[in-house]
Image 1: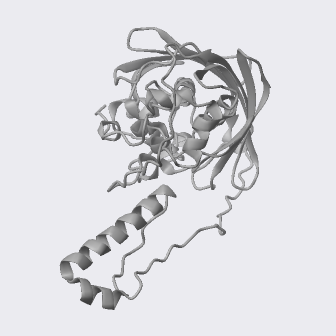
Image 2: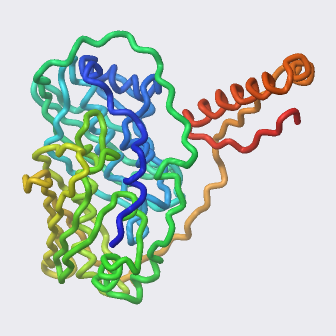
Length: 404
């Protein structure tokens, strides 16, 4: 497969300086949620962000766009679940402490689809001590239906060496880019979901590996499928700087996501035309966070069929030095599509939006008084301020009409 352009672009977002870790955990999250500090690169890649935080609780949101859709059309919501868990547990961390994710379990109730509205993850700390924290999260769609329930455990780790003392810092404006963030872009070629009704999964995966088929999530994460056999796949994914969260390491949310993707790809090798998999639960255990140095990480996954239509998919992720990063599994059931009761997809017709209209007071007189050069400079200053505020709220510039 060819390399992917997204991860070769200059990284957007900001990995905080060392002094940032001298803040308490909740103050770090508040700096991001209030946008005093630009979000880390992974938030620019995926479009997820924390919108609300109080001691012991956090809320994260993510838009299920085409770029986040897997080969079966389902949107990956594990990253937002892990992000919400991490944010909630981070409120238990004091200055000079970090969160080290240890395990995550998620029970799936229904898939997330493109265009179904904002996905919401509400997390709360169930128990916290001086050493460990446990939190749970509910993942909901825009209609309030629960997609999944998740729990996770983390260790509270003292930073060594201790970071320098924090000092008051001014708001750092987010740059304005000429192109949308990766999660907002057109997905390009993708697998039609009807293909699974007519083609065995292993054939589709081999087409993905050769590049004759494409799917958005492989493009977004730079994942390349390699060895593909019945019940087995290997793949590589770069430890890209785009995957950084609070530190210059691959975010746990994406580590869990890569394990999940590998499990499903191994399961797809056993898929038969006319059937589909329903995921029941996912479990991931974390062993280390690899440095986001761009080197390839390796995924190995296997699937085994039990009695009847029950399957277990196992996967392991290794860093470039062959150290085990994480291991996990997915329990799934294969269903004959004829047995499914297809519900007609409802189209969202309501949305809460803000329309920003701006004007330069008495612009005709000002233009005549300033002259063309100074007036054009003032217009550019006005437009730059508007673009920054609109970008900060992930909005869209519709048009500039001049004196219209």
